[in-house]
Image (cartoon, rainbow, N blue to C red; front, side, top):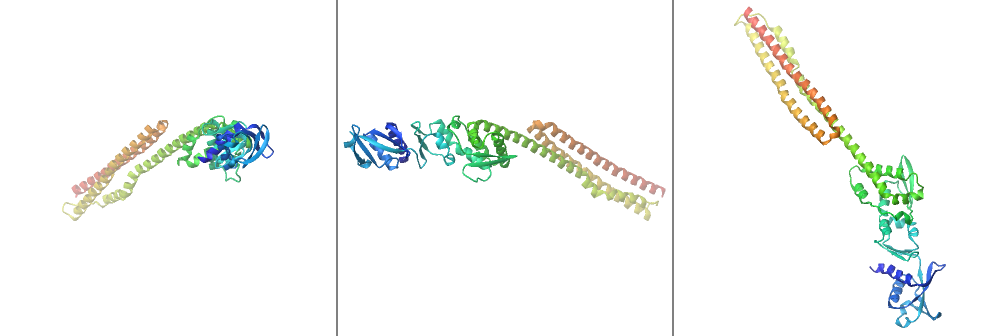
Length: 397
């Protein structure tokens, strides 16, 4: 890229400057011997307004003339050239400054990382192969993390995090904060997932407050960066604990709800049919009082016979209905047994409580089975009583 040539040319000229000094105008002043490579570099610096448009030429320590840089050619290569170059410059993601500490004082350069830098204090051209620069490029990811959980920003530098108490974080750093490599990928993946979004936001707030509350406002961001791997580990452990607790609560809620649901269904297998046939025993009892002594072929005998037939029909109606509920009860038992066995196998930590819930449902199913059986038996007994009375009414008559 053409813009990258600006820093490359600046680095070349800066290192070649003899008697280099910093002027009151924040420019570096020095002399340089001219050759074709130096001339190309000077023209690039002029193009990017990194040096004066003209240069003074010297011979044996004496100033000879001043020539526009664009007019310098090979005829001037025997002269020494006095040039002035900028000490601070920034354009299109490129930066020239004293050192890392000066660069990192600007929140804008933290939130919007530069692409390449030259530091005049160390005469160093910084790019992606530098460990400090690699860590520097990750700073915006950390800032995005903080911005997601912070209160709406009132300025470009301060962010406020609230969890039980509030802390302020200032986006300022020192070079020493970038000494240790850190990784933001795991945290980025975690926060990009939609699941548990609100919980993760709260966990990040909690982790930030606990991790930074003992530090000063201007030191918190630097401490977070220099210990970011430890912060990430703490946050991941907190999220893992949350997921385990969430899973536990979800499983517990599931089997408790299923327990209540199946107990209700089992009770309904008896209560529903009981409501339908509730009036029949009363009818059979009234039928008993309608029986009367009568000889065979008499009107009373025919009435007794009809009552007996009605009692038989009622008995079959009741018995068939109660007996049909046994298959419903069996189907429910297979259904909930399969469900609770699966839950117990999937969640071994809760298997004991799951089995207790299953046993509770089994108890209700067993009691319902006995209620159905006893109801059938009672219906048959009542019918036998009616049949006996009918028999005696005929023989007596």
